Length: 90
Image 1 (cartoon, rainbow, N blue to C red):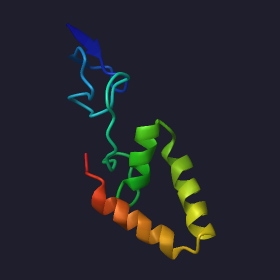
Image 2: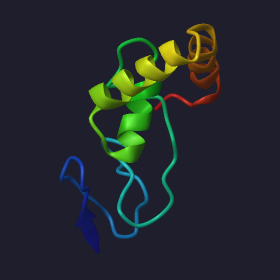
Image 3: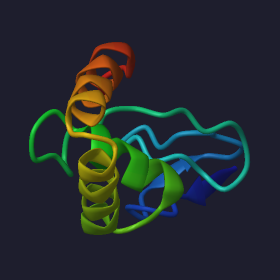
C-alpha cells in the first residue's frame, strides 16, 4: 500500500516518516531537524528550522536577525555557526 508525500505529492510506502524523493517529514512519525539544501542563504540553518516548523524561511531569518541584534550580535553569530556544525545536512 502507498501514500502520497504531503510536500511533493509523490507516492511513498505506507507508514514512511520521510519522503524518499524530497526528504520531507510526513504527518505521522518522528521528524528530524536538518540544514536545508533548498531554502538556504548562507548555510541552511534558518531554512532547516523553517522546514521543520513548516514556516516561511523569511520569517525565521528576520526573527533570528532581530534576536541576534538584541543580544549583542556576537552570541547570535556564534550560535548560527555552532548550529551549522551540529545540524546534519540533508
